[in-house]
Image 1 (spheres, rainbow, N blue to C red):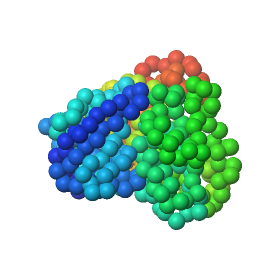
Image 2 (image 1 turned 120 degrees about the horizontal axis):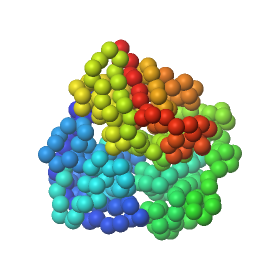
Image 3 (image 1 turned 90 degrees about the vertical axis):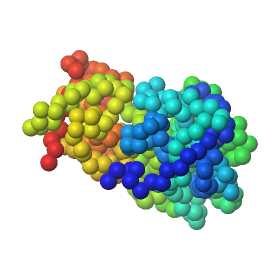
Length: 342
Ligand code: FES
């Protein structure tokens, strides 16, 4: 099932567009029909005008919305490897028209827990911001942790500080304040609900520490837009067992997109590394699989026998991050992967 099959699209207009931080634009949109939103919601946007296929769709978290549905605010980080999505969003101006869906919900906030921890990394604050506001309004016991590489790169910092005061904890890399996830989880108990959105390696570290502590997995909730991995994206060869349809996956496309380009139609749903519907077996691998999903557990990832082709990639062992995950740095020819479709 494609993600776009049940969506109802409408025209929207850009009301305002400003920089919320380095490389992050805050964009306020008004829809033809009301855009009612709730914490954790996102909208889908068609970022390749004139196209209606799933490749032209990107998802952006709703930071905030008017109670009467008259506008929603999204935050968009300009990606250095943008395939059109963030480039399109950053180029918008007030008055421009675009096509959007009503807010969609994959990351609902469950109210009623005795305590909450919210963790946002970088542009992940866009998904967490509204949750923190609701928890504050409800008078709940919560803590908001916001991790970023530098203060100028962290969106909505001032308003978060004003709104959440001592409940906001910052962890800023270039100030030498690197988040210790074990310390963070030290006072989390089984009744705490934990919501996070940010780079996959941050979420992976939390998930690992969460499992080590034996905390209940249903209380750990996360949103991914499946885009950051352990290695820089690079080009690699893709082969399909028993097929002539070999190709090269560029650093700017996913395996799923490359497969579609050569006429193969794998199953998929979320295209974000969450549902597992796109999983394919890896038959031969030259390099390492850069698992960018949150579907597989650690053991499955380390076996490198299957992957979520919507987000995961292949990298040579010399890519960025290799030291961090203990791989060797020997030189390889162009990395390659042979997939084994059933
Ligand atoms: S389509 Fe959902 S994990 Fe790939």
